Amino acid sequence: MLLKINKEMLGDALAGIGVHQASLPIFANKNQILPLKLLQVRTPAANIIKQEMLAAGGDAAVPTGCVLNKDKYSDVLLLGTRKHYNLLLKKLELMPYFGMDKIRVELEAVLNEGKLQTVLADGRVLNYDKVLIMGILNITPDSFYANSRTAIEEVVAKAGQMLQDGADILDIGGESTRPGSDSVSAQEEQARVLPVIAALRKAYPQAVISIDTYRASTARLAIEAGADIINDISAMEADAEMLDVVCETKAPIILMHMRGTPKDMQSQCEYKNVVEEVAVYLAERANLLRERGVGADKIILDPGIGFAKNVEQNLLLMRDLHALTSFGYPVLLATSRKGTIGKALGDLPAEERLEGTLAASCQAVYSGANIVRVHDVKENWRAVRMLEAILCPQYI
Image 1 (cartoon, helix red, strand yellow):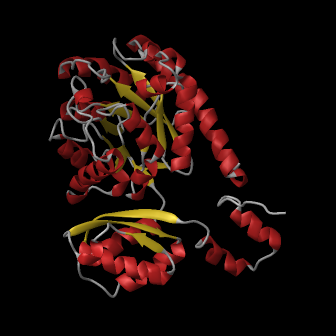
Image 2: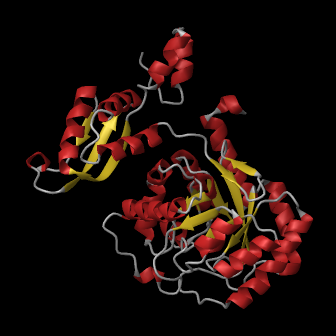
């Protein structure tokens, strides 16, 4: 009789057959092939890395003709366990040329990933031992999902219910950014959101509040009113002063990938490799903050599902969300009731996309994402917690 053992079962399986306790870390380093892709490596370095990875017992794929140095740069796909990568790192320490010193640093960061945290301006800390739930509160008359539109006089009660249902963060938005939507003025946006944020801060002093805006002026005023996090769909592209707001207020920021504006973004869906292009873009936007002294504990990445992507591209980003989790920043997935879910399930309207949303939230768990942004807090909280219970029953 033969049983398949997945990586979650390995520890119990080893303990079950009575191996020595000291050998557990050794086996853990051998239990899973971890594919990693190095982008735009100098071709001599690509050839060296391939040979060293083979010597370590792993493998590496390079383009045809790489050995002849036909191109200045090459991508390299590495295939190995942590044991293989640790052996490679030791070799790279002796080779500080062709850019391999930088590659070594990046590999070490991925392999020795620390515990992710987000530190709010007031010193409170968001930990990601479990996936956090962000509840959506739209203070708008025209959001794509009608049931999410909340009048100011109702928002405090609705927010309280979300917190009771398990929301870790409340995301307040004053402008619809659905495909094709028109923008509103800064004054209109601020008139919608600032009273709500102040009311929520008074009613729920310990709540974590996010302001969904791409305007630096709105972000600054929202933080003064009691918001804790900036959620910028433009990743600071729409308003260059947003960078200064983050630096000055010490508020964390969610950087989302988008092209163009909500009005015209769906005409800008041309990608050679949507996953790589989104990942590289977000890493570059994060680097702008790091260069200004902003720590990793102030940055969250969002691939921007539905923003300048078609259905297939959105599904690829959800499938390959692991690509974003290698940079050392928390990752947020926002798919709640979006059009891609409707299309994938046979042109369902927003009101009938709950089950698809729950599936996407579970994929966020599998992919190592840290936050899901949703309309239906209770249902998503239960789905996520149940999957986490299955994957890690010892933590229940």
